[in-house]
Amino acid sequence: MSKAYQRPKVAVIGAGFAGLRCADVLLQGGVDVTVFEARNRIGGRVFQVSLEGQLYDVGANWIHEPNENPLMDIAKDTNTFVCPRPFGVALVDSSGRSRSIPYAERLKTTIDDLFDRASEYSYQHSAAIDPRLSIMDYVRDRVTEEFKGQPEFMQDLHREAERRGMWDGDPTSSLSLKHQCLEKGPGGIDVFVSGTYKNIVSQVAKPALEKGVVQLGQKVNRIIYQDDSSPAKVMVETSSGTQESFDEVVVTCPLGWLKKHRTSFFVPELPPPLSQAIDNISFGRLEKIYLTFPLAFWLSRGQDQQSTGSIDGYPCVTHFHHPSYVKNQIPYPANQMIVSLTHLLQGHTQPTILFYIHGPYATQLVHTIKGLEPHGDEYNNVLETYTKPFYSRLPNYAINDPACKPRSYYCSTWQLDDLAGNGSYSNFQIGQADAAKDVAILRDAGVLNRMKGVWFAGEHVAPACRQATTVGAYISGERVAENICKKWDMVLKRVSQGQPLAHI
Ligand SMILES: Cc1cc2nc3c(=O)[nH]c(=O)nc-3n(C[C@H](O)[C@H](O)[C@H](O)COP(=O)(O)OP(=O)(O)OC[C@H]3O[C@@H](n4cnc5c(N)ncnc54)[C@H](O)[C@@H]3O)c2cc1C
Image 1 (cartoon, rainbow, N blue to C red):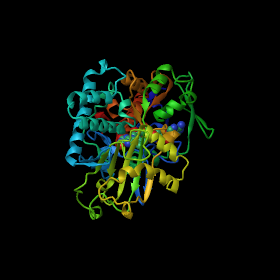
Image 2 (cartoon, rainbow, N blue to C red):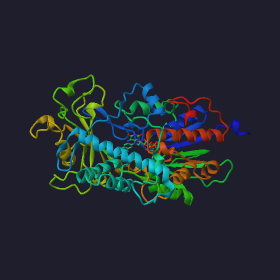
Image 3 (cartoon, helix red, strand yellow):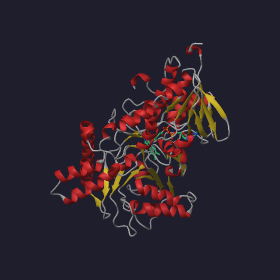
Image 4 (spheres, protein in one colour):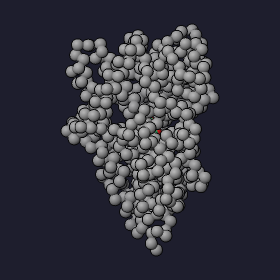
């Protein structure tokens, strides 16, 4: 029988953006799809918690580079409120002193320009750049050359440069300069998904959920692909003991998960180039802390109660340089960024601050709260100890004012979550010789996909400029589905949800 008359049976492992979009497109092609999801929910690293009656994203909450971004269309379709990244910034320096807004902005503009130049330098000279050089090395050299006579500004620039690590989940000094060029994308000002990603994920999941092809609570333990029959069959074995064979299997487990489990998960083990690619790409450590207060005390009283218009006076974002004024010194550089959600959430009524923490300090913090009851006294005390040196430096803070005492504390723990790969998302670190090649090897899965029916999707195999993002995961799932349909001569007439495939 010609392939055109066959309906392939495809398993998708994971119901995050990659798996859900993959299932959606496969269903549109008429494929017989089963999605195996180990958790009892969909969304993967896109997930919300409810704090004081308000939903907050624990994982992704930005849509990066919104130009030509299908998630922007889905946000619009689902009436999800998004807010462009605010530009203003305040700064509290290492001694705990609030610096003037013009100084904070000069510092930010200078460092943003240095990051842009690092990117351009990497773009122009990537092949010649030593893989051991970091973005921090580039910034240090430029700062030394260009700001020689200004020691205080130089020191502040070094501290400010550390916040770059927040976007990648690891310290700036570990991020590869050579591979910085890969992040050059279609542009646009990032938007904060104020209405949360909830409805966007639901929309992407809708076709698969409506067709009843998502099996929740079904962890896949092994994929056995050694069968040499033609066409190949791949066996999927779940933790509940089921075994089922498929024509094609799409693996969207996070990179950190593949690093940890690949030797027992794939039977036989993956060929060396694939294993090496998995080992060579790094996995970051970003976590988020939410503090909710009775009032947004950092704004002039009354402003936080307004439900219309912009909030003037204090910027949405505050940068803190490593606090040397703390009695028990924080053992790792804790250059911190906090975001006032009062500025970004619809209605402007949420007196909540979001901390982004990354790298070794994030690791230490999540291990300190491990096993503590969320919102219990011990848990809250740990988070209070970390956050107070920062929030107590915001305007209008008064130690005895009940408005200045957090009402709820929450910290994400992705690094403790095996199914999230014990981390946040992929990044390229110093020492990696050829990141583009590693991603390409993994994305194309060697001969595994065409010959053996094993495919990889997920943020770690997204187009380079969309790596590590929700839209990257979405596009990677779409691309694999399209390739499977091609392999089976199935016609994909039209792909709904966001923009058509043609734009990619
Ligand atoms: C703290 C944090 C902040 C972030 N911020 C942003 C942001 O602002 N903007 C942005 O674009 N991106 C952000 N990201 C990254 C973004 O969340 C991810 O790139 C994207 O969600 C990954 O989607 P995915 O489908 O590749 O993986 P996942 O969402 O992780 O989906 C994989 C799924 O596979 C399941 N699974 C794993 N193993 C098995 C198994 N053996 N059997 C069955 N199921 C399995 C998992 O449970 C999971 O549901 C952030 C991530 C984190 C953690």
